[in-house]
Amino acid sequence: MNTTQCTRRLCCRLCKSTELELVIQLTPTPPANAFVRKNSVEVQQGVFPLDIFFCHNCSHVQLLDVIDPKILFSEYVYVSGTSPLFIEHFRRYASDVVTQFTPRVGSLVVDIGSNDGTLLSFFKKAGMSVLGIDPARKIVEEANRNGIETLEGFFNQSLAEKILGSKGPASVITANNVFAHADDLEGIIQGVRSLLAPDGIFIFEVSYLIDVIEKTLFDTIYHEHLSYHSVGPLHRFFAQNGMNMFGAYRIHTHGGSIRGVCQLADGPYSDDGTVSELMTLEQIHALNSVETFSNFATGIEGLKYQLNLLLEQLKSDGKKIAGYGAPAKATTLMYHFNIGRDIVDFIVDDSPLKQGLYSPGRHISIVSGAEIEKQSPNFLLILAWNFAESIISNNQNYKKNGGQFIIPLPKVEVR
Image 1 (cartoon, rainbow, N blue to C red):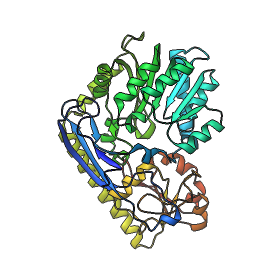
Image 2: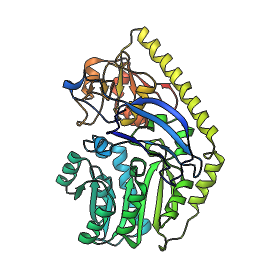
Image 3: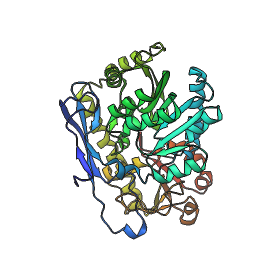
Image 4: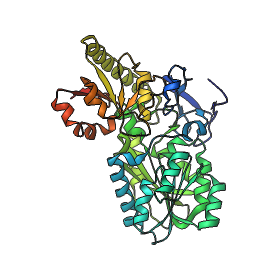
């Protein structure tokens, strides 16, 4: 492990406790979005630990090995605007916020980790002033070209104070999946507190640990995702940092997520009971028990056995297999399940930013959907399994011509 690129923190990201226990060890991987160009295919990429720790003090589940965020995010290639499902999700998200909290027309909405500005575009259509913040240079340039003002960088208190000085307080601050990605969550919340209007709201979405455990979504564990959140530890964290989490709602994105809604400690909104409901559910699911995570690890190995058996049988029968989708989670799945070029001939991805590149570490070529008809694989292994239904429905011709789909998670299925 290169210590200039990766460091190991010694305390819990939420409560600072050092009472941490290693509960799951996945196969070390390169950074999940470290795609390479053709001239680098023969260069072996470095790998970093995927060790998951449980905090005995607050029950937060997390990676302690932190890769330099500039390495992870400066050349980021994921864009939310390529997915019709996410475009619709963000349209509804903005509509829900405007309907429920009625921010004043023209007031400021800030999105931390705004990506290509898809969410902000809907707030802009609703009459808000919008500002995005994102570290990915090319995606920031694209967002600005598309009329969504976006700053390149990482959000912190210093940047928050600059925005406050130039644009005034924000009525709404959003952060989608950022709370999983950031090491310094306290620094983000200090910035949010500085920038938020007295009656403003902070809304975030993150993958939900209950869903990760229930559905064996182990491939959502990768270096960008430093935290695997549940409501109990987050509620305490916000209270310790001058904020009040007054709403928490389960949503369907990324295989199962939560949307948390917070205000300043003396904000005007009443708790709607959803926070305590989910905290009770987390006790029922024993998210405060190490044994829960031991059982989770056993489930992962069961899925690995099933999928490997299927793929090896297909290959021994002379079948041609391609992958569909090159999301970050595919890196974890392919490494831990030992799937390489001997199994998968190529990977189709709908993002032009990924086409022509090669997958992290395994160096499998990533191509456009046109290659399905050209190369006629017998099976498509859907690596972007959370979009399986739309991928299958968009490839009906392939299916009519005898092609079949393999869905690896939450359970192994052939369709």
